[in-house]
Image (tube, rainbow, N blue to C red; front, side, top):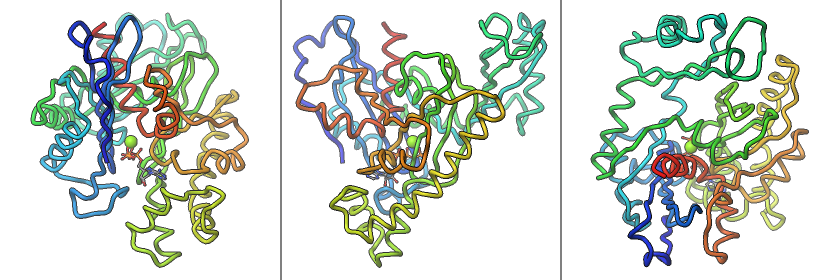
Length: 363
Ligand SMILES: Nc1ncnc2c1ncn2[C@@H]1O[C@H](COP(=O)(O)OP(=O)(O)OP(=O)(O)O)[C@@H](O)[C@H]1O
Ligand SMILES: [Mg+2]
């Protein structure tokens, strides 16, 4: 399940730098190789590989594989996609991180390096020495927007050292040089959104879970996890239509909610998608009510959003304007791939976002 592109621009590859984005999801590894050429970002290759078969499970299922199996799959997809760089950026799963907004007096802004680690103890359930901490001021102080007089809001991000060590070792074993690790939230948002001020929600529909982020002025305001994902659709269809899970997955991908989908399949998919969408809707309105702000659009990423007919069905259940992420729209690619890339785009948002940041940094 990997697609290699012909290296149509290999003639010029000597004086350009490439970067690889690696998104190790619970069900699928996604990789994207980009390069900068004459100031433009060019798609060199991309690929995806299902992790299920590395753990005796079906394609599309969420897994919890041991590290050696992940390394094996990563090496396979790198080979199948003809990746030519070792310069990589890797995502850390949202579930392995802790992200929260902390309110502090604006006066402490110059001392955040001392204050944040102390404050973080209230939010982080393990000793501070065991985590890597990072933070950004998202409102108040020098950020340009004040939410509450005299206060700043700080986005606090923590990743356990063991998680960092695990992803560094995966990179090393797969012969990659990990330039940085980044929580998938930030990578996905970079690839899915354009610059804008108004609050937008990004919904990442993965295999077992769906992640929900609110982004305002390019900054993450809030994040949630919803315990429904695209594998629920497969499992429900397998039960409802007496199919094996593999058959149900295949049919979900082939027909989805398209007009030519068998009625029972379509009904089953809609039935399992509805509670997920209802929860997205609830999360959205609860944010709007709490902050007295309107979320102007909802951008959907993740493999789950590539379900045929997803957009129209989801839009019929949610009032806010809904768009599918188009991360490859930020890259140059051969015209004959345009339709394919648009369709597959949502799945590759995190990987594209990682490679984009790496190119910016290296540029
Ligand atoms: N063409 C398709 N139609 C419908 N569903 C699809 C299609 N392609 C992939 N999926 C579903 O998308 C899900 C995988 O999406 P994705 O790769 O974004 O998840 P992940 O990153 O592995 O999961 P997570 O982010 O939760 O760790 C699978 O459940 C799969 O069945
Ligand atoms: Mg994912």
